[in-house]
Image 1: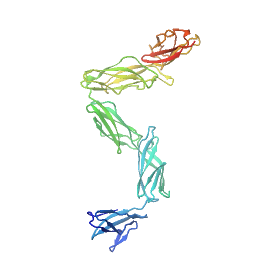
Image 2: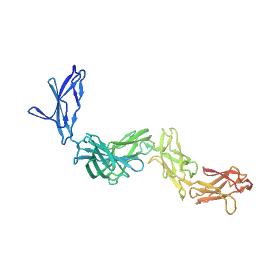
Image 3: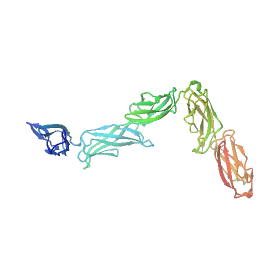
Image 4: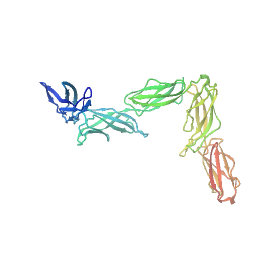
Length: 473
């Protein structure tokens, strides 16, 4: 407690103090909970002094009036000394909001427990579902971490709430309870790019289904979005319309119960109707290989129906991005009619774990909804690997070439060696349609070249592999 003067004391100044709960016939009734010295001295040159107040443990709340007197003047203040929380007292549990925690579906929140009286001199411990929070003396609010995996489908989290005295570990409260939980925002997904004048669909997602409808507040910069979007009770997501404003970089921000998430948006200039994409051209057949991490890229061109009046972003989409993937968009620069991008044939996309499929038909779309063109591209099985085993019948070594799937009609395997004088194969062989592999006998070999190292290169389209083999008798 601080006792203060209106200005620095010119000499040592004695101030009288009284802590009373009432006055009877002008006489103070001393407080049972708050003890103050009857007098304090403020040194010369100072204007205030901190006074130590001794508090007692009460069995009830008490209203206390503190009066300070000096030179015939008196000031007073009112305060309440509160008894400590005890068994049977009330408390309030605030329903937690669960947010993503990690990547395996776990969610985390905070169970806020507010006591109706402060923790005693030894503090208190609040525990729920194995998680604890310690309250220091005089504190009234505990924040206990809660976890779930996955998010509870019934929007309830159950456990035993235990409130203990800090020193004696005496249990003050033990209550089995279920508390309602609320889902937090987990994702804000917007199309890239957003084209001005061509409204597209964006999505906001929650970490789990809510027992009630959830209204999410939206704000946009550089884009137009509705003020709110509502996720119905029992659902985990809701869609809303988004449109661009001009061109450049924008953002969308979503807010739910004070927590926010945001994402940046690439905004493309409006595309005139006469500039609708007219054609998609790929320079060569697309084959997949066994290399998932280094897919083959195929140059692709989009042609517009006009000369671009400004830099235009043309959205791209693949109907099967596991086999043939595109960038989000291709830019056609001002004054041009075409834009180029790389289609990537994902390695292994036609054959997984010996479950192989035929040639895939993938549709590539260029342009926003309502102003687009498309082309279907055949993604063909390519080179998986090749081996150089000995033929049990002829005694000669054959070349076995394996595909990533069943071969398309007209698939050509090209073969070359760096020592055709000691080992040679046909320069090219057609793989029978539907075949998973092909065996290619050598066309020439030198039995006296045993021990010689030969490099064999096999390719299908632009996918190739080179292995070294050591010739043997």
